Every structure is written in C-alpha cells, then in structure tokens.
Length: 518
Image (cartoon, rainbow, N blue to C red; front, side, top):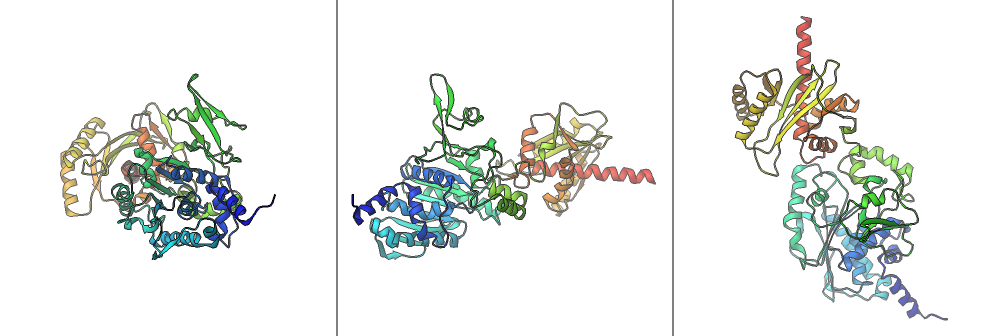
C-alpha cells in the first residue's frame, strides 16, 4: 500500500487529535535546541487540558514543579492545539503571568508555532495582519491569543483564561503583593471569561504560601479540579482527579465505586495498598489516580531531574523553597522552623510548672484580619516547656481588654503576663491603661524587637530537640497547623504569643538567677 503526501498529513492530523501526541510532534518548533523527553506526567497534563477543551472541566488547578513543561503545555501548545488539531480556531485564549514579559514570551511562542510551515500544512489557520502583535494576535475565525500580567488582566474576555504562576516567588511572602493577586483573582478574573457557565479558568503554579491563590482555592472549595504532582512522591498526598486517562500506554490507575457493595475498588495490575482507603474519603464519584509512583521519595521526572540534581537544588532552595517549588507545600513536610512532630501531646500539665501568659494583640473583628492570641507557656523544674492553653479571637478593642482581664482572672495571680507595646505614643497609652486594669496581677509590657521569625527561633530550637509538650485541648489543631506552616502561614498570632511567653519565661528566669547570686 502506497501512501501519498496527503495521506501522511492526514495520519499526522489524526495522531495530533491527542494533545500529548501533538506536543511530541510540535516540540521541535517551540524548543528547537532541546530534544523532547517524554514522561508520564506530560500525559497527565494533556489529559486535563483535553478535559478543558471538551468542556468536562471549566475550573482547573495544577501544582507542579518548575522545569516540568507546565508553561509550555498550558500557554503555548494548548491554545495552538485548540485552533488546529482540535478544530476550534474561534477559541479566544488569555494567558497571564505575574510578569508581563513571561506572558508575552509564551504569546510569541504560540504565534511562531501557529505560523510555522509544519502547523500550516496540517491546519491552515490564517493570522490577520492587522492584529498580529507581541501581546495579541487574532485569526480570521476571530479567535485570539492575548498575553497579560495578572495585575493588567482587563478588557477582553476569553473562552480559556490561564494564570501561569500568578505569584512572583520572590515576593509571595509579601502580604501586600499576595493580597493584590488574591483580590484580582476574586474580583476581576471571574469577569474575564466569555461565558460564565462554560468558559474555563486554569491556574497552574507552585505553592508558595498558605494563603496564595492555590491555598485560597483549596480552602474555600471553589470547584476546581486539582492536579498536584510533587517532585518527590509523598504517599499520603497521592493525587486523585475525575479526569479519565486517554492514552493506551498510560500508567495511570482507575479506582471505581461499586454501588451494590458500597465499596471502592482499584483496577490495576500494581495495586497500591492505601488506594482503596484513601479514595473512600472522597465523594462518591469516579476518580482516577494520576500519580503511579509507589514509594515515598520516588522522583517525578527522573530523566530530567535525577536524584543528584534534585539533592543539589534542594540545598540551594533550602527548606521553604523546596517545600513550595518542589513539593507543592506552603511549608516543609515536617514543618518549617517548628518541627511540630517533636511536640508530645499530654493529658494534663505536671505539677510545679512556672507559667507565663504571652499576648499578641489585634484590635478588629474583621474576618480577614489578624487575631488576638494569648499563649500560656510554662517551664518545669527539669527545664521542659509546656504549652498549657491558647486563647484566640478576632475582637474589637473593648472585647480584647475583656478577654485579657477574664483570662488573667482564670489563670490566677501566680501566672505572670506579658503584653506587647507599640512604639508610638498611642500604643504606650493603650498598654498603660490595660496594665492599670490588671492591678493585682503580675503583668508587664515591652516593645517587640526583631522580626517574627527571629523572635520565634529560640522557642523553635526547644521544639526541635523535643523539649516542648502540649496539653491536650480543642485549640491544639489550629495552633499546630499555624506552627507547621510558619512563617508561610496566613496568620502568625499564636506563634507571636508563644514567642513572647517564651522570651518572658527566659527573662524572668535570668532575673531570678541574678537576684539569687547577689
């Protein structure tokens, strides 16, 4: 059988209806100096973008490490594939990044791919000459591809709007810049789609903070399908999504729910013992395991990122960089500066503990504002530290004063207290008035010194060596979660209160020792 040139072109068109195959065939145009290296995670990316193209997904969140072709897939190949192989040249695509230059780069690469001889032979999509710029180009079917910075995403509307790295890794810890990005996500991004019912929004990024865009989506259950693939596999975080794998040789694993037996089953030649139990925690629906790795620490893309490269880069990224950019966590697996797994939970505090209540003050009941927190921390005669209690609330100034007075009364006169003092004259007057109301209790105030991390490090050192215990209580989880994520946590009030209490314990101990010597 002899195939004509047209036959060969048709074979390519058929093969490229699959996005993964399209990427393999088009790679040399977009990345001419870098040979294509395939990995299973690329099939997972392709499956999810195909779900967007078919209308099965209109909200998608992807957390994957840098260097794994996420930007190329999301912002270059996918829009070109939609116009060509998918046969939807009228689709309007907006791609945004934290920096205009990055968004423009991918816009230019998409245009180069669409205008290439290879693409035009297969799908002769014509770019209009009067709408062919670095940041915007349009075809004769009125489809367009526009690039924008996240803060500049106004004006046009797209059938697909993609945010590729909405946060700058250099400034993601800045509350002001992070809050600006979140505000745009909440107030502007939903208005930039053609049809609010069917148009798609895709967020693809690395985790950088508890309250980054990913954290906000996951915390508020906004209906996004979540594909999360860390550089090193963590079995307890195995990713499940509703997207069905489309590749014949895909290593992905299906888990199904049997209505008769009301049990989950995993259909695979290599069953993972935890799969059925893990999937049972999810809502009753079809789910698919997108991560075939089995062992803790298995690498995501070993051919490109072998073990020696990953370990080398982890030394440069340090703990938080590795957690966010490699592992898709806002804080390290074992905790940041606080290794919370070293804290033992005990039913009651031992006798003979010397206690201090340290406070961190806020003066608003706004749901998004900081909390007022009061940590009860004690030290035993053997030098062990006990976290005995935590008071916390988003309160008005009057209610803050009431909380502190009531807590002092409950703690008793033997418990010392420490309150932070703002450096301004109004701060001094406020604290002086509060101390007067606490007459009869051993409370004093002092200004904060150093940043939050510096203040927390001395107590974190005690946690690290297993010298801290915590009395069991309903407040444990919130405190441990904050400590685990600190300083990338959304709120830091409980840690600040503990830092003050620890500093006060150490200071008073030194004072007592000094008095004894004299």
